Length: 245
Image (cartoon, rainbow, N blue to C red):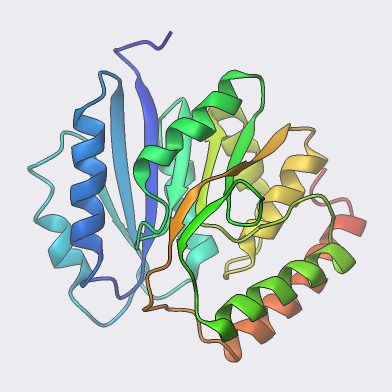
């Protein structure tokens, strides 16, 4: 049972140039949370950008009791933004989700199931047999994602089919310890936090979820792929240096 006086769920959303999608995402999350009797909060971290994302988000401040807007002074990266939002959150459980909400917010209940079973971290996955990928990525992006996961297995760790699905939930203790040790600021931070969770002894469960690709993407397929690969070698070095223990 949860304490109705405490925040039960924090939802952290990193947002970079998301003016066209963030409104619909917030509406869906707010509508879902209103059906629940637990206390919740939404934290949107605006990672710089050149559009009107922050103005769109501000329109929703009066629609939900707990909506916090954090604005980075300049673009710092998705990993940095998620870390900042998680460490400022107060919920017993902390979910971070992509601004496009490719995984419907109601899928968090599948993650809660495993967290209630004793796991510390539950991550949404598109790579399991039971996963419901209803709208696929383009062939190029899908192929690049599969290649990245193979490289993760070669360099960092094995045992997880999909490290990059932007839908992950942490118990409070795990969130605090994992994200305080996070170093990577870019898109490959998902791999790092899962590695840190392992080194900290937290139990992680990969959970099949529904996923509907949203075609616009802020990931540059060439430039960001290079930096993500570079960051995997950084993680390996940090791991060997015992920085995650």
